[in-house]
Length: 405
Image (cartoon, rainbow, N blue to C red; front, side, top):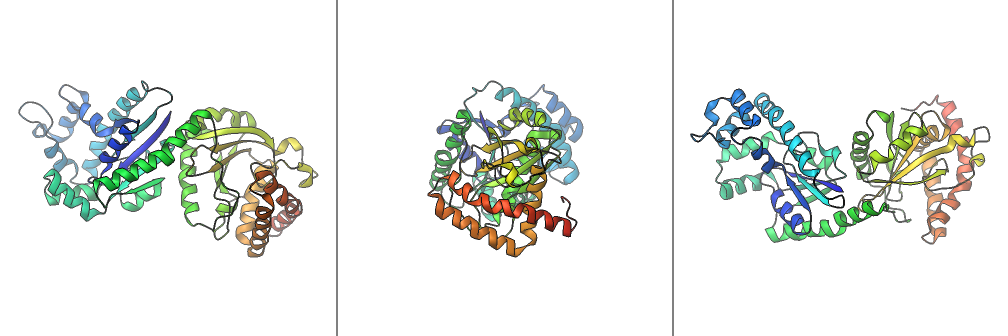
């Protein structure tokens, strides 16, 4: 099962995207529908709301007057928090009950207006945000829903900002055009991102990046933070620390467009336990390996780097994303082992030394030219360089009294 988090500000067009996804085969779980269900007459949710906001939020027939409730609940942060504390747990419980009945191979799109505000984004392997600027949303709310302008602006102001939504968005869908434009964009996301992701995950197949180098991309850092939050949620307390490592963690350095993340754990036994937790998050386990200290898929001889270490201390577990839109490698290494330490050191060494960055970039360009698109050749060209720089990096570490940050 692939779970997609779908969100957007009020009036942005999120529901229209949910309809498009549903037409393409998604199982849509609508938080607004559930939120209405859990406050129907006779429910514990409605009883709690009346206790918190008063009997005047009820219509004469005993049903909830949502406009009256909104006027009270969105008055300030405290009243909004009270509303959320009542509704969110009930919605979450009902959502879990619905999802438990869905087939294992389904794509579940969870339509959650307050996904960002509730901190739920890291629960999803992919987050889709539908966006329209505030003035356009106000106009839609007034003209299409008959909402008072002041009420529309208050509702928008009470929700997450565009910056907060961008921070969690794997896919940003612009809805400043026509409904047809939005439907076409949503179909493209479904066909080229969501459906391949779901197929890869079902087949335990990873998304492999191209061997060519991409220009340094500042967005890599924010993308890595989203991935770290997702992995931290999946791993829980078993992850002692989670770090963005490798070339994409070094500002200004060209790299293959793949994010490398290191998860530090107490033992390989714990690493093995994480396989079942990482798969629902979108990360497929790759075979065990003894590694090149710098890259996930190298199979070099450990002694070429460190003559004094036990080769067993270079073992790790590796997972990779099934998401074709964001190739990612997750390296699970044991705390204090030389491979775990060197991954952190190598990244800091590159960040601190422009001349080493330039040297490494030249080696990578040579490796790309020699690889012919084959990853094994790409890695092999770099191995000789790593055999030399392993000692140099540790010499630098000793000179500056380096410790993992």
